Length: 262
Ligand code: CAA
Image (cartoon, rainbow, N blue to C red):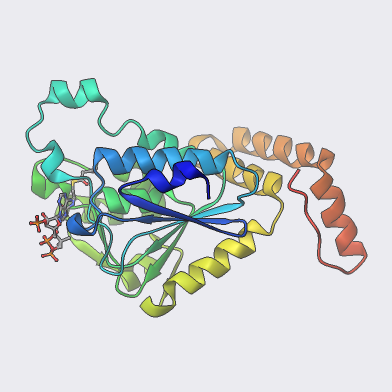
């Protein structure tokens, strides 16, 4: 851990091998995402993204709350002009542009911005206690950290519309059934399971992981023909990496690959 990583007030950061763990840590506010937390989380994620000794990032909260949303008290008194001038949620775009696999390990409440943070991650592992939801219309606003866009893409318009327009909560089992989360696990197994998934990913070739993520992103952004062209470009581009040579040699030699992540 670098010295810088000790300075945080609202998150805890830990490295275990090639996996970085970021735990949201504002228990007094159920991990509500205030400006400080946003900057600490986004800055840390960007730093870890640039650090080749890390292959995957896990974001987690507490047993009770992954995150109960953006900090309502912080923004309650703001005007439109103030929200616009401060670009209140702008930094989250940088979190969504992290190139390494990010796993959300969600226990308890993932509401509003908490649900949107999970949706920005590549994989969502949910404890059976997890409760998702985008309750913003009940506060006189709408989801503002990508929820309207990413939930529609994740679960399709009719389900997303029902969840966003009613603001109702979605339990873990339903969340898995509709494709909002990758997998549900018993609450007491959540962190172990997230660790296993993250370690498994981090052991793979980092250039391949980055390429896979960039190419999947293209699937959300682009027409099929353009996405296929991007896939072809990334696929062929990997043939100049040491890891492609090692990965394919290891297959032929019936052994595990020893990736150098380049
Ligand atoms: N912002 C600020 N503070 C919050 C918060 C939030 N989103 N969520 C919880 N807190 C605070 C509470 O105010 C409370 O603080 P005090 O003890 O000082 O009163 C503390 O965290 C504990 O919360 P509760 O006492 O409410 O705990 P509970 O167990 O009774 O209820 C809950 C839990 C159902 C999650 C409830 O806290 C809740 O409804 N939270 C708000 C959920 C929400 O509306 N999220 C959307 C936020 S808006 C948003 O996210 C916009 C966007 O798109 C980016």
